[in-house]
Amino acid sequence: MCGIVGYIGDGNAKDIIIDGLKKLEYRGYDSSGIALCRDGKLMVRKKKGRISNLEEYIAGEAMDSHLGIGHTRWATHGAPSDLNAHPHTNMDGSIAVIHNGIIENYVELREWLAKEHGVVFRSETDTEVIAHLISVFYEGDLTDAVYKAMEKMRGAYAIGVICAHEPDKMVAVRKDSPLVVGLGDGCNFIASDIPALLKHVRQIYLIENNETVVLTKNDVKLYNAARQEVKREVFNVTWDADAAEKEGYDHFMIKEIHEQPKGIRETLTRRLDDERNIKLDGISMTKEEIEQFNKVYIVACGTAYHAGLVGKYIIEKLAHIPVEVDIASEFRYRDPFVDGKTLFIAISQSGETLDTLAALREAKRKGARILSVVNVVGSSVARESDDVFYTWAGPEIAVASTKAYTTQLACMYLLALYMGKEKGVLDDLSYHRILDELLAVPDKLQTILDNEKSILEMAKTLYRREQVFFIGRGLDSSVSYEGSLKLKEISYINSFAIAAGELKHGTIALIEQDTLVIALATQNFLFEKMLSNIQEVKARGAYVVGLAKKNNTEIEKQASQVIYIPECADEITPLLSIVPLQILAYYIAKLRGCDIDKPKNLAKSVTVE
Image (cartoon, rainbow, N blue to C red; front, side, top):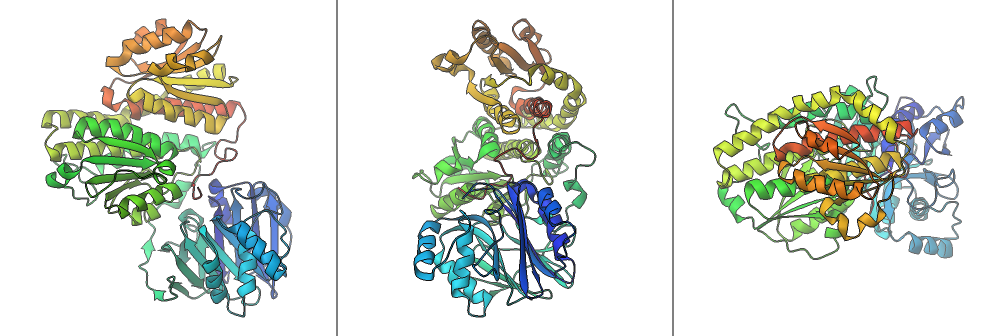
């Protein structure tokens, strides 16, 4: 979840690393630090809080260097503090380490280092163990010492290491945490993610699991766990670097909300030929293969899991295949019924979510066909899948996911349509009806975005609430979970989502005078039932905000305020109904003075358990 950057070359390492860390601050912002090799010594500077605090701390200090590493932290072991910030060093300060991940046996290693080698620890972190381990094994060859340290460590990590005694070398390792290498002219880089490097390089090595990288300014060598050199094709990044900038918006989140019509249009139209047949990026699933699947598993975390809930409904309806949706962190610790007749769909924006990656590997071990829906090209989930279906959301920087969710939904619809048609259970009329509805979504979304000010005015009447309930039925229930998550993660309001029919089974006990309830009622065949649920909470004093299609004005008789979405088929509503909830969450958080792009305790890419 943390962000790491390293540089070796003839440029100013300090400025390059600080700039790269800023591009990775979405991965963690509890503290930051930098280690630079200068005049045969390592200079380490660390500061609690945002990277701007570190910049102020080192401003004016002479720190010219050709070699350095930097880190922005999401705290796991030890509270955010100057001492717990990375980089961490050995006792004499000659070796510095940055680390993204967790060392699971760090307590055991800490005790061994203290007892057998007299190590005195300065921090509460698991990462400091790595620096001391490398130091114990260091005999003049940093690469050899890193390999020996790895033999002792258990867990998930991407690390970068520099040593004052070898000022022309950097060593990096990847085990279950993301790592990329940037290839420059007379300079080379390491980073957790590609955006940190785009200002400087476009040629990238995507580092595989259990690989070690040795960098000098003119060379990069990759080695496997057996210390054998491996060759790697260069990945050329074609992204527009400006896409990762705010472009005049106050926050990345609202910019990315506004990018959703484009993202959905790209995700859909890139997969249609002239006859409007769906082409799944080279994925070939024949009628016989689809019929062989006796179950689909959709496994994901957080927002991606909520996309999976919608995917379950759509795949079952259009392709007539039973679907189970599971949270990745739960899937991997039970014994699910997965075999060669299972289609396993992993959904992840980053493609680096550790729990999702571990669940994927478990399903693959049991013989399932793996299809991943990811946003980041070349990510770990993508590389370890049999088939990859990329969303076309573009870089998503805000911690609170918006456009990744809606493009994931678009992929779910395309997959369901494709499988239903190939299998022969979806007739041409139904196929084209739903496809027409999907292709109309971007323009309909734009009308919602054009009406953004009305949602802002609504937010002004709601932002002081400290408790909110989201309710809905059918697809609305699935969307309510995501709407609730958006609100709680950026505004810190205690928000809770529940299927409306479950209210009477306990939760209605929490409804009292002026409790805010956001009621989704976009499903025509369930509309009357939702009106009844609204009446039930209003009878207990709730203040109800309804969300419905524009022609269902009957809801105004029950709700205190109403948000309308354009008319569409019931099956398509999630692509439209989530957007006003995203906007509402954004403005409520803004009115409360929250740091929207960097909410407390959260990070964009969850690469630890």
